[in-house]
Length: 447
Image (cartoon, rainbow, N blue to C red):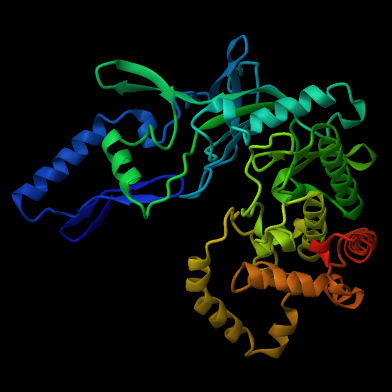
């Protein structure tokens, strides 16, 4: 609710839109009556419409979450101490993740977690049977195909269960009925009809989904040195390659957010997770063209440019170069130094040229302010241009220039943080990858 003086407005935030009510003026009796009616309606609103998940219960006394997830043989109850990823942004997939176990906590102490539970609101088709982009569908196929592959143990999560979250909703003339929790079921039928009739409003269906998988790990920011970085990335990309070769599933979002690790030293293992943006090439009806997927600093040049060429295996390998450059430049271990390591920009699925134009003046102003101090200018990391460009095409042009020659790429790796143990090995690896993918490969996207 937004309140300004004697005016009140109710605002509803959906996954990719915001709806505002007419302004209510409370300086007269009719306005005050509307406000009272609004507050009363909210008090009778079903909990799922207010953003609460009926399948997740928080035990405040013992401080743990009780999570009920549907399985093939009936509901399964998991227990978790806390959410490892919280849905903190107004828009997007609103992803929440828990590490959990099936053992009920005793006196507030939970068992060692071995299950990773993910809730999210991805775009989906209304009919679940033709939802070719469903992450649970992909992971189930991957687990079934590589189940006997011992070399991939700990490098790929194993499917446990998945599905669409169901909620109880009062349906006209039918009473209480279990329905799928979607971006349409949250709204009233009248508002849905108004949005459908509005030609200027694009409202892709978002569905609340849950997926449970076996296999948990730590985020890459806890890696200790260049040796561990190389080992973890090698395992993740081995998993990526095997999945593509055996299942024809292309990940399409290789980023620091989607790689975990377990163990230490010679026993360390990397794990590739999050198949939200993956596509199975055997599913001919899955959308491929004219979409940009990924996390901004790690998106391939072809992906940033939004060309008509399909996202391929090479795009994902190109993303690996950018990840290693990011790690080598900003050093995950420096997370406590303000201003040294920038936050990874929010994922952008489809480029919004309108928002890019609006940000043009702000970006120009920032660039002008930097020119005042020559010493400060020299300290700016070249890699920062990969995510601070005026628009996505500018970021793509910068990446193309940086990777074009050995000399231009050397200028970038020269800014790697030399305090990282084994940093020279990391430098050598990224230069080898660049030569293999850019100089020696005939793919036209990389030229």
